[in-house]
Structures are given as structure tokens and as C-alpha cells.
Image 1 (spheres, rainbow, N blue to C red):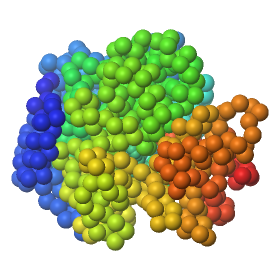
Image 2: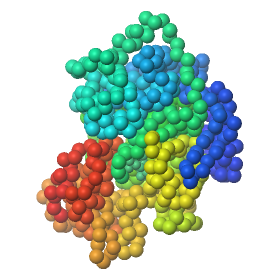
Image 3: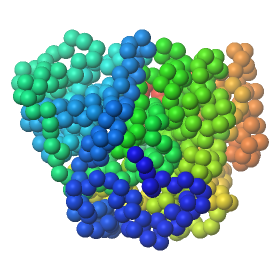
Image 4: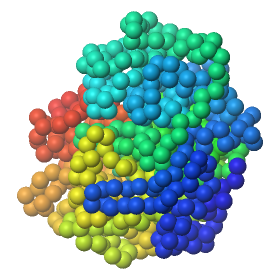
Amino acid sequence: MSYPYQIRSAEQYQAAYKKSVDHPEEFWSDVASHFQWRKPWDKVLEWDFKKPTIKWFSGAKLNITENCIDRHLEKLGNKPAIIWEPNDPEEYHRVLTYRELYNKVVQFANVLKNNGIRKGDRVCIYMGMVPELAIAVLACARIGAIHSVVFGGFSAQSIADRLQDAKAEFVITCDGAYRGNKEIPLKGVIDDALVQCPFVKRVIVLTRTRTAVSMIKGRDVWWEDEIKKVETQGNPDCAAEEMDAEDMLFILYTSGSTGKPKGVVHTCGGYMVYTNYSFVNVFQYQPGEVFFCTADIGWITGHSYIVYGPLSAGATSLLFEGVPTWPDAGRFWDVVDKHKVNTLYTAPTAIRSLMGFGLGPVEKHDLSSLKVLGTVGEPINEEAWHWYDEHIGKKKCPIVDTWWQTETGGILISNMAGITPGIPSFATLPLPGVQPILVDENGKEVEGNGVSGNLCIKFPWPGMLRTTYGDHERCRQNYFATYDNLYFTGDGCLRDENGNYRITGRVDDVLNVSGHRIGTAEVENAINMHTGVVESAVVGYPHDIKGQGIYAYVIYQGSSDHDDKLVRQDIAQTVARIIGAIAKPDKIQFVSGLPKTRSGKIMRRILRKIAEGETDKLGDTSTLLDPSVVEEIKNGKL
Ligand code: ATP
Ligand code: MG
């Protein structure tokens, strides 16, 4: 496969960027012409951010799975599409070639049809990270069913909420899932969820852990039995459903760090073009390389950069069932070594936690296959960036700091590996086709460089959300109503003297201390540089004199006989050195853990409530990984 739209130099980046702004329709139709369409589009773009309506490639017909699988069969049929690394390193790994993936997807697509699933039906997928999860996703796309993957760590209540919101009548799950030394009873959780969802007609259950499960007659069927039925029917094919470019491809609920999760809707044509385009450009993927994204397919990162982006590019995508710290903290490095991974794409939270184990687990493995490193999900603090650069990339691998959201479908702001320079803790530059703008509270554009403001995007890109499922008004309110004619990201941002973007945290989390705007990420970055600090989270609280004061929750692992008071002073001094006295935390609370979403993000809104003393108003905590942390913090003292 070749990628004629892959930008290969800084000059090409500049030229492409200019073209994408001056002639966006031409720019995107050039990119889109390298995909397989059943029928070309009538119009490249129609849009109105007020309503909002956004249509890319209208009138075009396609099926995304023909682009992710069928079109590769001739040349890449025997090449690996998916390498699967199981939770337990002793268990044998699996490799699925493009041909094998094709066979499995069409087979399971026929299973879906046999079970009454049709184009437009919503299918909830609640599975562990096994190859069949990717197969289920693609099989839905093959027949035009709308998948809604729910991360296999959510509770029964969270699943019930999502099933009801999506009005999903079909569920695909596993008996159980392995994660580290834990076994998660997925089917049991689904059974609990379905008590509140009598409208669910069919549950297809894959065997993974062989846990005892209850199978309800008429509702629950085994994946393996259904495959056998398809085999005896003797039709090995399943023609791909012809989809309109703007037909729904999937619904995915946001991670819920800022409030109740939103059912973000992506459509077939634009999402396909954008995930592929961003994949080959940001990571500079070259044919034959092994790409390892450590996210779960339950998050947008997994959708876009394990499944659709890599596969539509004919890449080899590594799918890992386990966790970074089991059987030991060297597991990622073991996987990289074993499968000769070329690109590793992970989250700052994972890097920070692995840093805590020192270099021992890293040094045991050969990481020389690595060419490119990436991060996503949160601002990466400088200390973690340098550790990743020195000890994992051995200072030879560009690090791409990719800023994007569930709503954006793919990466919007990032350096391109080896093409445009990376800067620690900066996402740097927008991809060609992306037009960021900073505005002040009143929506007035903040022009020039060396400024900060609220990050918005002023022109559509093909991968953007089209609506929030079943509630278009919520989509308008959330993203398009704050500022006229702009998509509002909810993130605060700084643009330096050279036009590089740095995400400073959620707008709600940008502090205003005595009239100075300070991002929570900036303060955390400085605190984390202090020796002994493992991780920190910063929020604002009402302060009589300053307007807002800075409250820091810090995980500290210094010497056991340390004096808390002195350490607090030292941390404040470190912040003063790095940012300035204005950013010194007013309060520092030592904690043993931070409240995180299941995708590993710090839930600052809960910490803010605690700092404000409103512990009875914590809001929706259903997406929290470990609620007991909140109790500890509430009861902790300064
Ligand atoms: P919710 O919208 O439900 O509160 P969420 O915003 O955490 O959940 P996601 O769509 O998974 O859900 O996360 C997107 C957010 O993650 C961005 O808006 C930004 O705040 C943060 N983010 C992602 N990548 C980066 C990055 N490279 N640098 C800084 N922040 C990032
Ligand atoms: Mg969000």
C-alpha cells in the first residue's frame, strides 16, 4: 500500500496546510480519492455550525470494511492484519492475516444476520481485548449495524444507561475477560444490566475464560455455536452493505471526566478518511511496520488507531489483552521486544505509573525496533516526556503528543513523527485540514502568538462528530452554542511565540489566580518535577484575596521519615522556580491515589468539589475506576 497523501517533509507540511485552508474541498477530495467508494460523492462538504449540520462526501456510497479488508486481499492477503498478545505471556499469541481476518469478519457478519440484526440496528459490544472484539466491530460495520462498544470495565449500571440511551436490542459479550491477575465476569455483569433492559432481544457470548454463566433460553446464544451454524449453511461470503457516506458507523460514549457521558456519533465516509489520513501522517507509518496502540477498543483511541486507521491503511495492528504491570512492570517492553514493535502509542498515565518502577523492568528488554513513540489522553508532563524519550526511545524516536477527543474522531493537533519537531508537553501544530482558534470568555478571537485562550475549531474536518445519539440539541448545546460558528473543545490552550499549541487542561480547570490564567496542567507539570512526587492533580478553590487559590493533591513517595511541612514548602519552591511564585499551591494534600476514570484520566471535577468543601455534591461518579479513593481523600487532612 502506498499513501500518496502522506506528508514527508516540513515544507510539504506547510504547503499542505496552506492548501487545506485555501481550498479545503479540493484538499479533502484528493485524500478521499485514494479510498474505495462504490459511488463517488456529489458534494465534498456541506456545513452549518449553528444547527449544526455537517456532511462530508454526500451522495457517496461505500462500506468501510471493504476499505479495511477487501481491498488489501490481493497484495496483503498473507500479511498480518492483527497480532494478538494475550494477557498471560505463557499463552500462545495469535496472528490474523488480512485473508483470515476477512474470513472471520464475513463469517461473524452472517452470524449477526442469522440473529436478526439489520442495517441501522444498535449493537452493544462489551468484551475484553480479544481479536473477536475487532471482528465483532468490523462485522457490524459490514452489515451496516451501528456498534456501540462499552469498555469491559464498566459496571452493570453504566451499561444499562448506555443500552437505554442507544436503544440497543443486541449485545455481544464474553463469558469473562482476563486482565492482569483478575478475571472479570463480563456475562454476569451483562445479566445484571439486562434486568433494567428488557428490550434486549439477543446476547451473543464468546468463550474466553470458561467461567460458568447463565444462558437464558431464547435470548442468549454462544458465539461458537452460531459460527457452526453458519458453516453448515455453506455460504462463506457476506456481501458488504452499501452505506451512505453519512450513515452512522458507531456511537461511542465519552469517558465522562467532566460529566455525564455523551453518545458521540460518527459516520462512515468522513471518519474513514480522517482516521486513515491522521494515522499515516502523524505516525508516519510505513508498510510492514508493527503498530502498537495500548488503548482499549472501548475508547475512541482504540476505535481509530487499533481498528479503523491502521486496518484501512493495510497496517499490522497489535492488540494487547493485558495490563502494563502484569506479570511485572516490564510487560509493555516485553511485548515490544517479542513482536518487534515499531510504533508504541500509549497514555501519560501509563508512562507515569511505569516510571515509578524504575529502570530495572525496561533494561531487561531489547527496544531497538522502536522508531516512533506517541502519547494521548492528557497533557504529558515534562518529566514523563523526558523519561519516555531517554529510556524508551533512547533519544532516537520522535514522540508525537497527539491532542484529540472522542468527538474529533482522530488526532487534530500533533507533531508528525520526524517531519515536524516535537516539544515536551506541547501538542505543537494542527494537522493540515484543521483550523484551531483561541477565543476569550466572550468568544472574541485571541490573535497572534504568545497568547492563551479557549480552544475552538472554526472549520469542519471529515472526522468530526455529527450529533449526540438521540439528542441533537445536546450536541448543539455542548459544542456549538458556547461560541458562535465555532466548535468548542472545552479545553484551555496556549499558543507560544512560534505558533505551537500547548493544552493547559479543561477550561473549567484553568485557574484564575489574582487575574492570571494558569492551567492546571502547567502547575501539575511543575509539581511532578519535584523529587519524590509520583503524580499530582491541581484544582482551584474560592480564595478571598486571589479570587482562586491553588489546591494540589500529591502522591509522594519520598523517604519514610520525611517532614510533611518541609516537603510542602519544597514543592511550592519547585513550582515557584519553574513557573513563578504566582503558581505556588496554596494547599497541598498528600494522598495515596487520585480519582481516575476507567480510561486513566484524573477526574478533577470531583477534586474541585472536595477542595471547595462540597463533598455532598460530587455528581456522576459512575465512570470512576476506584470510588474508595474519593472516600480517602474526603477524610484526609492537609
Ligand atoms: P468527557 O467529555 O465525558 O468529560 P473526556 O473528555 O475525558 O470525557 P475523551 O474524549 O476521551 O473524553 O478525552 C478528550 C480530552 O482528553 C480532551 O478534550 C483533552 O482534555 C484530553 N486530551 C487528549 N489528548 C490530549 C493531549 N495530547 N494533550 C492534552 N490533553 C489531551
Ligand atoms: Mg470531553
